[in-house]
Image 1 (cartoon, rainbow, N blue to C red):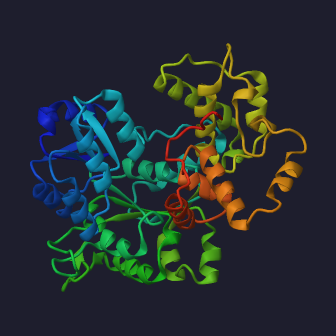
Image 2 (cartoon, rainbow, N blue to C red):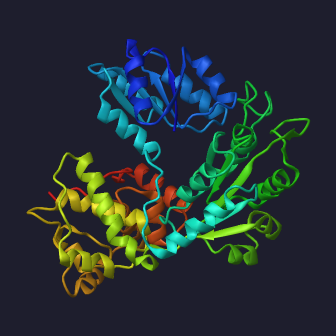
Length: 446
């Protein structure tokens, strides 16, 4: 990941930089907000910005919003300066990190933005064949379409294609088309010229130019507005883009990898996705199998996640009980590898004794959740006299809690788009309901 540090962090910048670099981050430093903004505009983008709390955090976030630059911001300052921390959070910072920097805390913030490791863990023959095909097509410049259910690891495959290609030393730039509002996605992809809209105080380089010479991942591309699809098609065909407000085209050399968890032929038939763009992207289609069709990977991945989260929580690494293995193998895993990871994270925290038993494994639709026979009838009785909106709200929040706050996973289980889920959660927050945050484990009942 790419980390931009703005300010001196009360003299702790060296320590913070070393921790981030040791965690695999590429670190850039800017002395003040203007220099930081210029770095972001120039194409040297960032996945995360850390700003000295002594600087004007509100000014930075306001400028990012005005200039349509989408990047999470965390503030850093002396640990006992609670008033500064509150001001930073109110200004829009996602988090406050006390200084001197704590290794585990910075690591947690970095991993919340991007996975620390992009290694693909697999053993099943279906994945062996998929990776063989990926390796075969990776050296080409052809556009690749990676499809599969949510949680199967499509972005990992995209990164694998980049790392195995002649472009590996250039940039891999990812854009989540579902996570960026429609009115911002165009400027995010193509950039803009100074004065092209209110707040465009300087030229900004978009993701196409940022990825020049490398690979551009268009994640969940079926969520893109059809109007923007036409502009994307031209960029791919002509190998040139137009900045918003620009007067002349700009040549770009970018390899496109697109992903989707939807049936794209159905989207084309419905008219929500352009047929010509679909054929342009679909030179090679790598179809990721769902976890239920990768039986040899279930236990293999479960053991990997047990090791990962036992180490992360300084806990003993316990083996899976035989009954637990049977339970995992019998589950259909609608959330795929992501669901399995969340399940094993919880199991590591809840397990007692010398093994991870079935009682520590909480699965949707399974007896392991602690439900008793006839629970469905009880739930039906509980719903009598309640509004549809209230039942829907509880279902969404409970599902999100089960998924440790993971929005994409929850949306997949609920059968709604990530954008619909995000809008509903925003409403619930405004109504005063507690919405689980990403990475939040189930809390015990009190």
